[in-house]
Image (cartoon, rainbow, N blue to C red; front, top):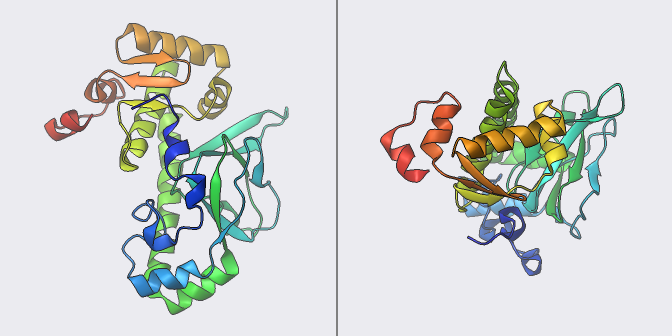
Amino acid sequence: MTADSPTANVVTLGGLKAACATCNLHELCLPHGMKDAEVAELERIVSRGRPVGRGRTLFRINEPFRAIYVPRSGAVKTYTLGSDGSEQIVGFHLPGEVIGLDGMVEHRHQVTAEALELASVCELPFDLLEHAAARVPALQHQLMRLMSREIAGKEQQLLTLGDHSPERRLALLLLDLSQRFAHRGFSASEFNLPMSRQDIAAYLRLAAETVSRAFGKLQREGLVEVEGRLVRIASGAELAAFCGYAVSGSQRRVC
């Protein structure tokens, strides 16, 4: 694998007009498990605009909830603002992951979503999506699955931010990213981080200097190698053990 960001290589910009049925994120996104006719129903409401530049927002906190979004390439962060105006990042979102479900309950977004790098994004107006789901039970099932995934993501963040050392918090994040990149067909052991050290610090609720020291300790322990944003995991099994997870033999081979 090269040092090019895996999140930037999921689709080429020339493939933005590809249908949901032929998108290489099909198995990760809303169409997963749906029949061709059901996917065609979904395809009718999907909007694919121009790529979103780094630092541009998809929506801001307190804006009315109108749509959900799915990156086709690139990565997105979601965050709130602390009392001092600093970002408190609540999630990093990779291609195929749905963004915007935070607005469903209050009908206003609870977070701001901002592109970490150049990203192509599918937009699905939620009123049209609801109408389609009423006609297509499989789509309704997929929405339930996505809401469950949203809950699981929050549980993962709580796990990462638990009563752990900075090194373990960082290791949990790297392990999570490793698994998510692997699900997208990329290497689980070598990948570029789409986010900055400052972003990682804002997610882990640590100072940027503490994150740098944590990277240094993980390197000295022989668990990872880091060159800028390129991360190489020496052993997924050892990193998982460092995080406190029991790892099966099959998982060792994968990692």
